[in-house]
Image (spheres, rainbow, N blue to C red):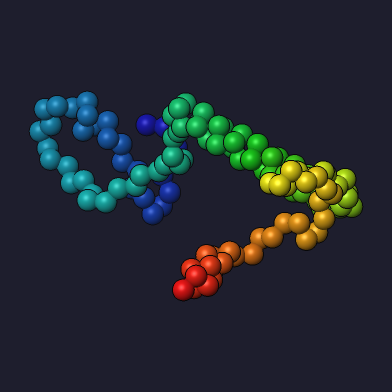
Length: 120
């Protein structure tokens, strides 16, 4: 069909006699093996668009990650700043400066138990 001579290891017979001649008198012996060539997978326009979108999303993600890493590196390289002390009003109405010992983050779970045992 294509006008190319077949290589020696292939018979290179055309399918046209089978297709065009509906009323064959003689039954030709055809081989039971055949060669199929393919140049690869064919992608639809939708698949190509999806690939472009995935690639763009990957580039965007990589850019945002790089910016986040750079921002974190900048934040970590800045020296800590001391915040000014604030005035604190206590439950009794006293005002004073907040100091290191003013905030107690310890557990007071057992304080109530001690009060109950003191009354007995």
